[in-house]
Length: 280
Image 1 (cartoon, rainbow, N blue to C red):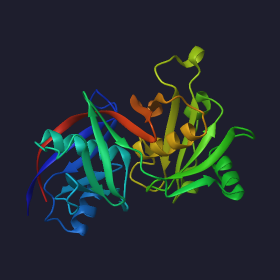
Image 2 (image 1 turned 90 degrees about the horizontal axis):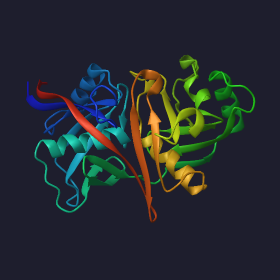
Image 3 (image 1 turned 45 degrees about the vertical axis):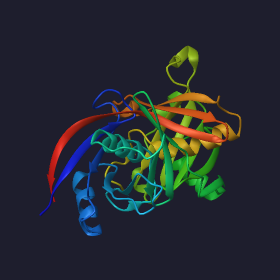
Image 4 (image 1 turned 30 degrees about the vertical axis):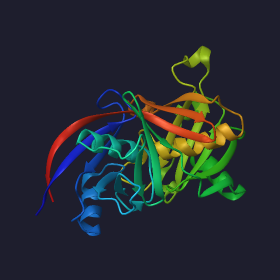
């Protein structure tokens, strides 16, 4: 049995318990695939990550990302949370940016004060959602005719498709039939209305992952990266905006999106809630 350094981090929040929790196991090179998967099931969090020595000489570290049911090639809040844990444990980047190695390759991460941001990776699948699937989703989500303005695939490794809805109240009021969503990763979003909702954020997002440990993800970097590529590419959002996510779950997640040239950066703060050792 190995004793390993362990951190549990809250991501996309500057306050503990208000973001999306992530379990991070450091120096995990000796763990088998089966042991990693078993621990991820045991934590019952949306994701658990394992920090490893990089294979690519350009990378600062390598990470493997597990949900309770599968390994992912990429995910957003695990990217920022793992980077936070690596830096906090003494990690020193080789250059100005931090380079993470994961299933989709190398991911660039930058630091600005207390905030970390990753460069949105290219989409593996994009374009409109098939009409039959879209109608199924409308019914399962309990949405009326015309509530879905548009739907697109925004898959950058986690399988996301996104529904653009009419208003924030509709997003917050969703109560989907999770049994009918099994096998799908669904994001929904709508703009904030300055008069009704205020100006703290510009969009409200929710993320549903039926069949995983948590059927709704509190705050989701990969989904927001995909949605940002859609919104910014279509001219539906300014070059810099803030997303609110986790409201229905009692969280106050804030995702900062910024376009710089051709790059889109997805950022937020992270805070460590648990720091200790783990027997595996």
